[in-house]
Length: 442
Image (cartoon, rainbow, N blue to C red; front, side, top):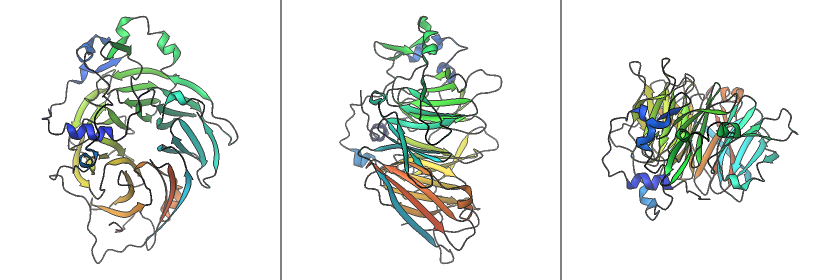
């Protein structure tokens, strides 16, 4: 089994940044595979290798990770003035320490889920007491890359290119049981006979179009649909009710896809090591998703995406050390960049957005907390320091009532295996989300 470093996309993208890029979005019809279409339309793309090589040299990682975003993009950060009032109280304590890096954090209901290698650890969301673990016996699945929730099920994506579905216990003492593995056996059996159901993933190797050929790096859910992206450059859509793959965009990007986000109205955003963010929609008259826009402003690999509550703002983090802010234009179906948030000294690895707060985790071992003002500028509320290695995942564990009272509780997981909890209290204001000018950044 190949183990791929999270740093590799940064190195690969930086190495290719000198190459001219074609700003014309490709014809999306040549990429699409679904139940309703033949695979013959994708034959033109089948001869190229879809799995990025893991042999790329990492000798110049430090210089590659220091690339800055395009200087032409204005900064959205508001500089503090003498009239700005701020009083931020920060407390942090270690929750747990693991021997292996933390790859993903997620919260659902009363539980906090912590992925280390192939094991998912479950904690009480409030007390941080350890409850149980699952998938501990299946080391062949590889490391967990993502966690999502749909109905009464937990979805986990893995290094081995599969998505596993677990039941969500109703009681704390119940065990997490494996319900299915995607693609399912039934889905494979109904397709394996016909040659048209196979695609080339590399020279002399074909797989069914319903399966990922490399690590599944991201998951997103919307209504009854599951969206997955992979280092094999593909985007796949699954039906949640029967776990069947219903659509595949084979060459969604020109390099590994690292992140996916889906708005409430069904618009899909994918971020890749090819430095691009692509926007996909499913028109009412179409049976498949089509490419509607390609967003190109980052200078290196895009690692993380996040949307605000109504989908009008998109945030993207990349190896160029910047968080770009994109806003939906009324006259268009896609986002336009409005500015950048700068301050991190290394690659952005994770982003989360909750109740008008944006949190960014970085390879510089810090977490920054941002809030958008009424004028569209952004205040950096705090910089969270304490990790010894890059911050790989973030999750907010606050209850809504807590946040309305000016308290935000966050958990961060890093490649040093440390799980930390942070409580940020904002005084002199009724809420950190309203009419505040708070700056506590260095």
